[in-house]
Image (cartoon, helix red, strand yellow):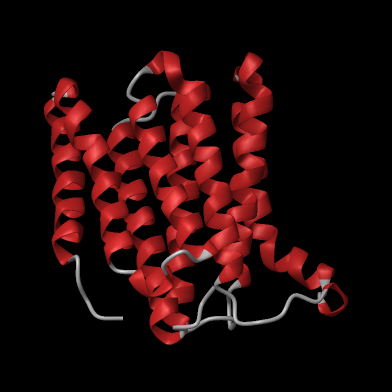
Length: 232
């Protein structure tokens, strides 16, 4: 695929840096402009650089994940809409999970899956999620069910990202796996800050890991497409 749409990528980085500057300077009102611009720019970058897979399920899944991430970012600007924001990001995680499965160069055959081996490979992810739940559990209240569902979706996304090892080119694997892991770290910082104990500079940590996570995921999918032009 030819490199194009680079302007949208620069806008993404500019919007991300600007949003973190607004956080540091305490200009929360300006974030109503900077924060939505982040994912809007990345979505436009992805759509303008993947015409080769126009109308494919993969493009629709990533596009939906980016747009629901945009919706989630906007909703989370309003504390009273937190649950709706969580729901938007849940859909984004599902979109990414399907996309990660689609970008694996193999045929799915349950008879050839070593479930015990897979479990141990994913064990660090499970332990991380279990520790997060243990820390926030006592403070969730009526949010317990949606938060647990979100944690499970997050674990599934990162697990499928790890599953891509040796099933795509190494650059794509590293970018997507690190991106998915950073997405989980970002969400975990948010959960700990809200439901366990306030974290110093939490907003900067959340946005910094989130911005890098989303960028790495998109670039990882593009890296797969460069080497797999017939991707679904």
